[in-house]
Image (cartoon, rainbow, N blue to C red; front, side, top):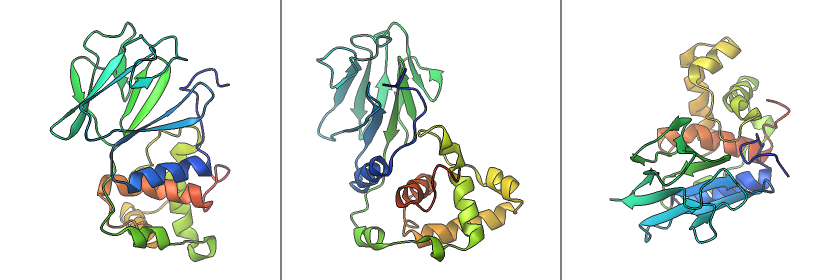
Length: 226
């Protein structure tokens, strides 16, 4: 059992596939780990307006294993189709979004990491892919298909995930500095990779994280590479 749900994990191929499948549904969801370190996905049903988070069993997202969480700790609320999080003095130890303690109500954005107690909860809001599911599901990329430089760019993009599964992909500037390429060259290689993986139609803020997930899940990039 991990000492803390905030302990660094590397998502398994099965867990990555579960996340990708959830993203393809196009509905917001939460990603967290339980007391055994197992991944849990919580779909945010658009028909619901509120979800409570806390240590008490009666919460919509119960986290009974984390003793630093209050029985009723925080609340997620859907307003005009957007999910927000608020604490409003409910908790003793506070609620954090991307490392900053919050007060009042905050809108959640794709990729935000909420921390309550010792538990990290990632918020994902993917775009619906119903208009083009076959293209993504049928696209297969193998290692021989990738030119060496494109694979190096892919590894550099995924490197932040070596010790933190809730990391964000490396920036173009970081990749360029690591590989001694121009930023324009990095952008060109990434565009080619988006097309190879069939994800070029996704919103810009989702392409990079999806590319990392697809590469790790398919085995094109392993944690040893990072």
